[in-house]
Image 1: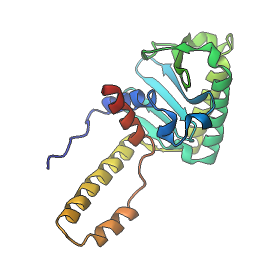
Image 2: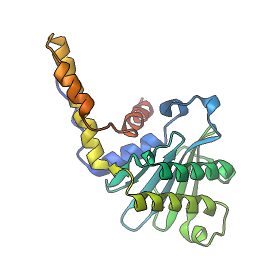
Image 3: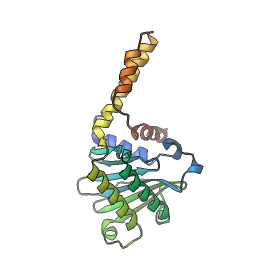
Image 4: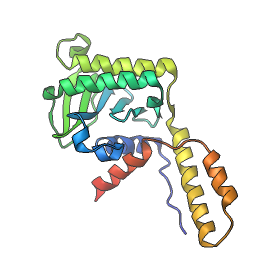
Length: 220
């Protein structure tokens, strides 16, 4: 059986995560539409000269920060303090959703620009703002900007999350082991030791599975 080769360009991986995050629905994170607030996910993107920083916070507590050059961290929301800050950011986004408009395209921000994207019952809502206006607190979306920076600061202070490259390696290792286990099962081999080993391996990635699924839905 030919195994699919994972992307070897880190920037392609973060691009995939970004696209997938913008396509996530309530069911992807274990909620029904009736159980969700008006906004169940928010992305804040900071345009810098050499890289775009994307912060993603979801209703299930998932928090990720990834860079357009392929760097980043995933699984930050496993820390309680991060989850609290993410919840506050989502509450601000829910309150300020009227400051954004429905969008069908999701360009990266330019230098000194900040893009906001909200996952909502109205679809994806977006706004592009000059960072100077946000730094000065001149517009209402500055509150969401400050909440996003507070979340990033807490992630950095606590060292929360795991390196994106390491997490992808874990996910790929788990995929290969599942294939090996399936081959052993089809051959009628005793796979008890292999099952025990898989349970003892590192944790899986919370973001990659449903982000990847969302990307596949967009492509069809």
